[in-house]
Amino acid sequence: MKDNYEYYYNDVPGKGLCRNNLIYTSLISKDRKTFCQWYYNDEGYHGGHNQVVDPNLMQEKFDREVEYLLLMQNHYPQHVPEIKDINLEERKIYLGVQKADLWEQAGPADQEYKNVLEDWDTQMLEIIQAHKDLGLYKYSMHPSSYWVVDGKLKSMNYFFTYDNNDNNISLRSVMSHISEERQADLFPKMEAAGINVDAPTEHQKIQLLAFDSFKTNFPNEVMEKAKAIYA
Image 1 (cartoon, rainbow, N blue to C red):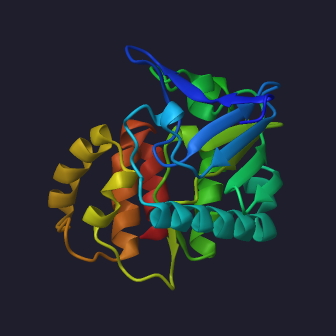
Image 2 (image 1 turned 30 degrees about the horizontal axis):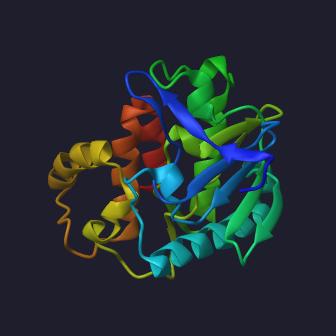
Image 3 (image 1 turned 135 degrees about the vertical axis):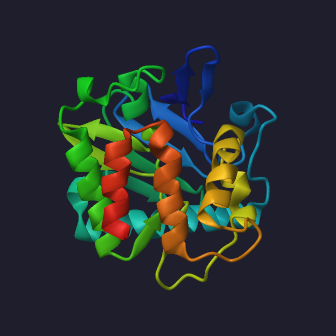
C-alpha cells in the first residue's frame, strides 16, 4: 500500500469500524479525493472474515467491475465516478470521490440521505434506469456503493453485475458476495417470491429481489419505483 493511501472503513454504530466491502480491499487517499478498489484478499483489511479467497473468483469480480464501469463511463459518464486509473496487473481501480460514501455521510444509523443530497432518490432512479437501458442487472446496491461528487450521485461496485448475455445463476453460488445480515433478510423474501436458492434464476427476478432486500436501507417507495423500471 502506498504511503498516501489507507484502509477505508464505515463507522457503524454499535459495531465500530467495519469493512466497506466484503469482496475487495477498500483504500482511500489521505486527501479523501481518490478511492481505490483493490481486488486483493488483504488479511490486514478483512481480518479473518475474508469472503472471497478463490483467486479466480476475485479475478472475475475485478473483470466485471472494469467492464461495467467502462460501459457506464462510455454511455452515462454522469452516473459513475471519474476513473482516474485502472491497474490491470495489481487489480486496482482508482476513482475520483469527495469526502466519504453516501452511507457514511448520511450516518449509517440514520440513513438521512437528503441531508447529503436533496434529490438523491431522483438521481438514484436515473442510475437504475441507465442500468436497465444497458441491459444490466446490478445487485450490489448498498448505500456505501454510492458517492456524491459536486452534487451528483455516483455509482460503483459493479463486481456483482450481470447482463443479458450472462447465464442464469443460483443465489447459492453468490452467497460469498452477500453479508450474513442480508442473507437472513433474503431467505424469507426468496421463499415469498418462489425462488429456490439452489436453482438457476432469471436475472430479472434476482434484480427485483435485490430491490426488495434493500428496502432495509432505502425508503420503500423508492425501491418500488426501481422495481417498476425492471418489471
